Length: 234
Image 1 (cartoon, rainbow, N blue to C red):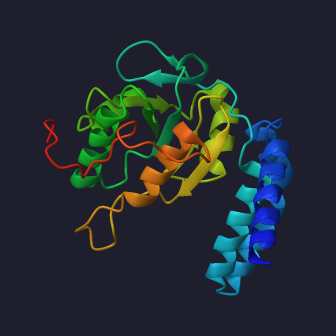
Image 2 (image 1 turned 30 degrees about the vertical axis):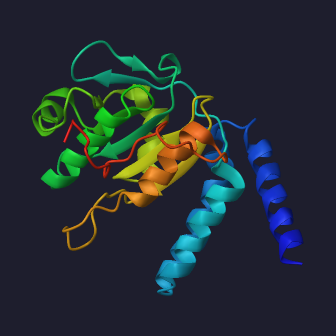
């Protein structure tokens, strides 16, 4: 009975992914986000915070997971603008705002991830601000991190701002596979526990692995973790 139920759930998930794989991310948001916001606000007003989280999980699993991320043109602090369609590898986008208090340990960990996965996954940090402010805020990131920005005063970025900032806020992390399909969204993205004494890398690692292997089992040595012993980089 349990096996039958598990197979049914897996088939439903695959069916939902297949349905979403023909839908662009911004179009899926236009269709389904208003209802989610209405129901989520009602849950929060009634102090039903767990329900609010469940509503987001339902929105993502049913309507957003597997949707196509159209090409994003992002200004880089150093170098020419980047087009995500030209990357040729999976990527994650971590959105930030310059007025957020940067955690040095977390920035260092993002740098480590970018170094570890430099040939496998592109790590993009996207600031919502102008170039001058972002250049100052982003100095702690290494050359392996692609630091970008979107100036909200630039009208040509209205759709991007509406889709990625106004819908989810910051910090948020979007995981996109090599075929430009959205695999995961991590709202309130953080690699630190609340007491800021330990890293919470496990879930992020699982989602990074998912970008490379989808639902396949990962092979040891193909994708590396940050806690490997005898690592010459550390």
